[in-house]
Length: 103
Image (cartoon, rainbow, N blue to C red):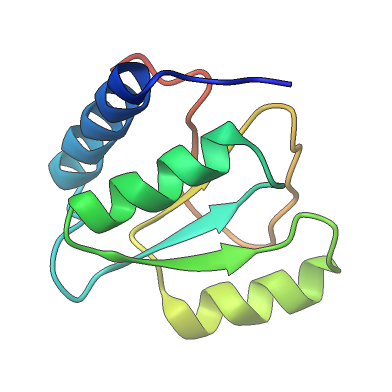
């Protein structure tokens, strides 16, 4: 039930893309997206591409071991998620909650 204007969407994408660039996202780098279908997911997808990287989708509802295997294989720069998704990941991965990020 959430919607954005094109200007709001573009602004959110650009702010997140600048943040991603500041943490090292660029050509040939991967960012995991561990969130359910939402406006934040679409913003995350566009922001990763705008930063020059590629995204690896993760389903927060899949078993922890499966997501851990995907993360171990991909070695992403960071994992984007939201507080509402409550994703549980094995190991130590840098999880960025985009709905709480101050950009």
